[in-house]
Image (cartoon, rainbow, N blue to C red; front, top):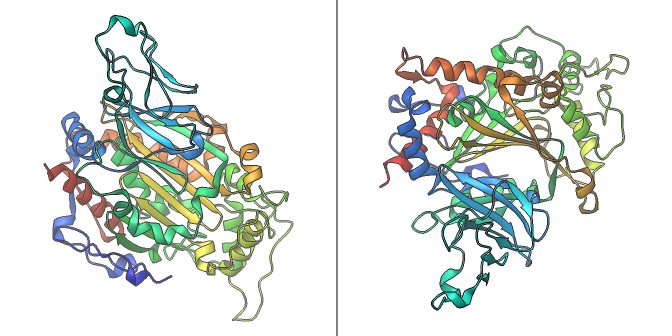
Length: 484
């Protein structure tokens, strides 16, 4: 893949990253990008500005296409105090309408469901799934009603890579193709539209600002400390970064020991990688093989859990089946062997890994699609998350997490994990095992950070080159807030 042809976003006050092969330590961080005011994380006024100028004017991820599986499936989508309804029509197309009856303004839909039309529960005015007016109760008692004028107002809605992307105010903003363009080409190889949630599909209420959460997944600086169980097989010191328009990429080497930790053998690296598998990842990696998970042998699984590079529950290999590395200095590395394991498990599902190099198979290629979607990508297996702000509380947000697996069409409905609910501040042991240790650690830490940010003693956060993507993320937010 020719990464040098990617869009370069080098503007005053933004991070000059233009090449994924640049290790973070080799990059410069302009002084203007070194500090982030803390009030943006807890100020109700700042959240209102974000809602009005960013979320209501920017393409963002609302749900997965398979959350609306058949004609008549609908789902409410809230942005601040505005309500929209996503609906799959009889023509198979997903549309997004303003969620209000055009008679007297009652909400048409709340939550999610399926119906043959959109019917107001107040006076039974009814619209077809495509938004045209179908019925006015006691029409004869009204003055003339022009059906065309009473079509439900439609807002920007595109299905891309299996994600439903919404822009409540598309007029005058960047067209969707231009918005997604910088990441569309690199991600096309993963065939995201043909992935389905296997093992993990959950919505979590988190006691932190949406940016506090997003920041945590955009850097690996904290990995050796908050996620110390990962240092045997994750070399965060060799993380590579790139800016791609409003979006960004972080490549974190897996199956390599951290340069911060003690020197370990290739066997130790391999065993650590195979041992740190969340329960959901074991299910995911074995979906197409029927092999028992966590044995430490080829075809068993992957610890890929979150954007940092995995994180498991410690329930991996039993030590009875071990790969024995070659005694020769040029023998296979742990990365080569891990790539072989992942290729075998992925090829068994029918996904062709031949166009991916070993580092693209074993490492985490984490794409951030501004403002809220993260895709930690392996061929045939993508750990994805997206965050949505709370409508009015800057100290809360909603996180959606899915373990996506490329799956043959005839199997998708039967293996798709139903959407569940969790509360991040009160995770059960079972919840923690499903999420994986690293994600659980993040969810425990996020409320601590949110509390610290709003204590009043810290006016600014101070960023390092580890946190270049945070700087770019916040400067992009600022561009929206400054516009208009």
